[in-house]
Length: 199
Image (cartoon, rainbow, N blue to C red; front, side, top):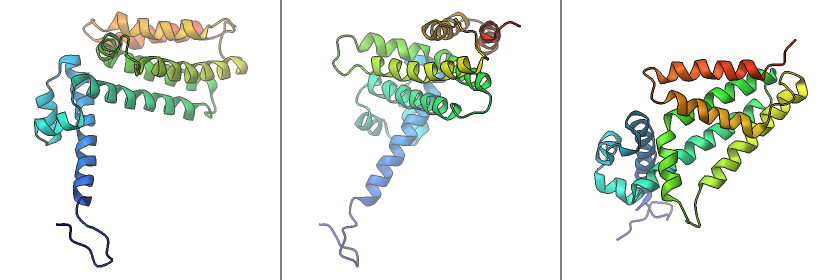
């Protein structure tokens, strides 16, 4: 039976909603860490344990591994898009572009296996999120590139699609090296150098 608070509003269910929200957030955060550490095969039971919930709670929020992976990627891509939009007002146009490209390389390097898993699992699905993610990333990258191009700090011939392809290529080339992050930084430095206009 639902008991009423003094103002006549029901109390039952409110703590559970707050707990459910906290559990959801913790599961996504711990999944993000676990997938970055162990890739697509990270243990779901271990993710639940780190989040402080039972495995059954994880499956109530995310019935399949794909559901959890898509949530992690969707949040990370939203963060990258938000970063890019905020950088559109930065004072130094080329530095803003460089900052976002570095974040994009880090994302691609960290979650490359997850993105491939989603792409393979989402084939022929009407609700495939991958095209939307690509469109969002391309739009913010194109805006940053256009801004740097207008300021004269980017070579005029830098094609938006080519730059994003090189970001993905850097992540692919660095992923199996002993120090993948340092390797990615070195390759990105070469890309950025090539994007600067020559005197």
